[in-house]
Image (cartoon, rainbow, N blue to C red; front, side):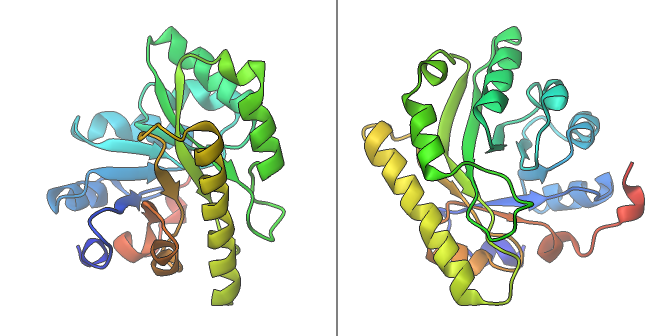
Length: 219
């Protein structure tokens, strides 16, 4: 897989498989890919039993509270924790399953208002709160963010630099001795090389691996 050869071995490649037929996922699996990313809860639920047990499923999309039940039983990690209420709901579902759910805090670093996520002030306040400390079935492993969808590489780089600074601030303040808090999920097909240069540990790539998506498969 040429993408994997273009990134350092310390960076995890997540193949974003949304709207892709299961045959393409199986082809990537046969080539050695084990991490797959989905952004629709029902699609993750439906694909899960069709792939081998050693696949690591990453949920990377906006998650509504009424869809948490489709994701927590199957996900290896949830990248898109954009509110305290969402993390609380995930904690409750994970507790039912006697599971600890690995999660990333999503930050809003782009200019587009349509993107989701915490501000650094909101995240720090939440991590200090009694509510956060009462959540025993979730484990924060790092942060996630999406840069603006623009051609200006300087803007994209500055947004990734901002996310890295948020990671560093939270790591220093809340997880200084926790080696598990290490993930910086940023970078997609169009900007992953910049993201890696700025410290990404996980890149989420779909089109560059699978080609254009078949949106007619959208249900």
